Length: 218
Image 1: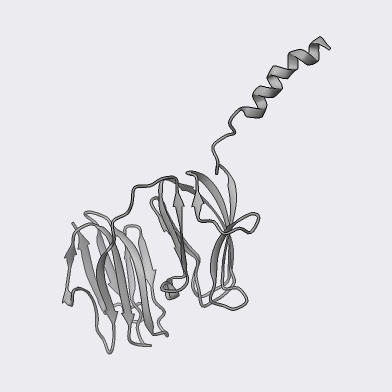
Image 2: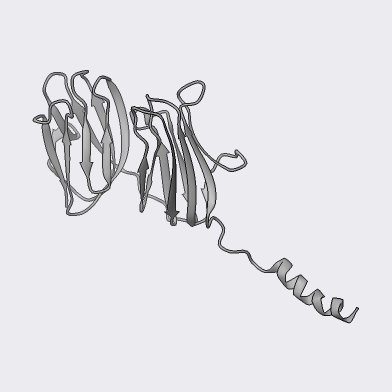
């Protein structure tokens, strides 16, 4: 009896003691291209949609079920994607810090997208606007308010890419950025990008690499 009484304070302490940091090692599930084709989601193990998370390290199993889409997860310190042309089951281990993270299908980013707020990040400023275009014909450019630009201030941008040809695509690469449209597809996509100070970003047509340009962030 005395031993049982001695254990009671310890049991009460364990009952109220805080657990380890929420989110450490938590499993999430990402899916793109389900039965109706044009869906993308990020959920917890119970199937509930994820909108907010605590900072920490997460394991994310991504099921890419379509060769028309990709699953692209990005934000501070995270930039993971599956290929557009192909099906894939992949597991990522990512560390989220206080910020807003986004996931999308790059070829259909205007409709297939979502976001997660991690912790209590400061409110983000609206991204600045850029316009990218490839075609018609053998032309490719990045503009701001209709004027071609080669240098911009570093920061967060929304790049609207108009792909006007089935002979070329628009492929942008640089520090932390690797986005492209399809060579045989046409349409408009919008990408949210973080352009880093001092980095040079290159855009080109993968089908005709001589069709290219550069953009430097200062």
